[in-house]
Length: 136
Image 1 (cartoon, rainbow, N blue to C red):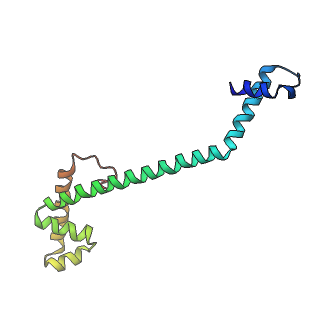
Image 2: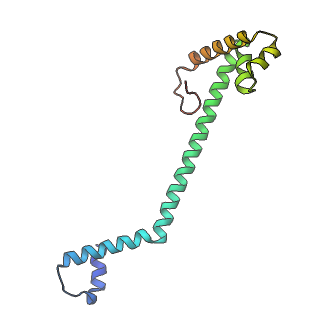
Image 3: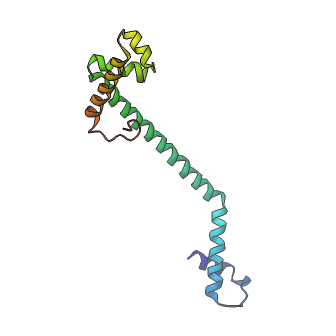
């Protein structure tokens, strides 16, 4: 309808050189191109992209926080020996040697406690669909 209105207002400029349909089609195409180049369209596109990214970042943050809470709770449910090894190794970023010295136990014992702790966590958390944190 817009093209017909524009044509009606500018029909004095129209020179009969071909089909009216082709002229109206060309006028419509040009009007669409003008709109796509306009500030209004670019502003709407920018806002849409910007707010979509913000929403995604917020969702990702909330998912990570929720998953971290679930993981923290699962770690707290571990037996003390496995919990110590997991906390020192993954959260405190201590080496196996440092943990062994701190707890005054052999390095092999630290390794087996880590392995057992990870197995217990995996069993405890198997019902959850992890999206961000837990990969394996």
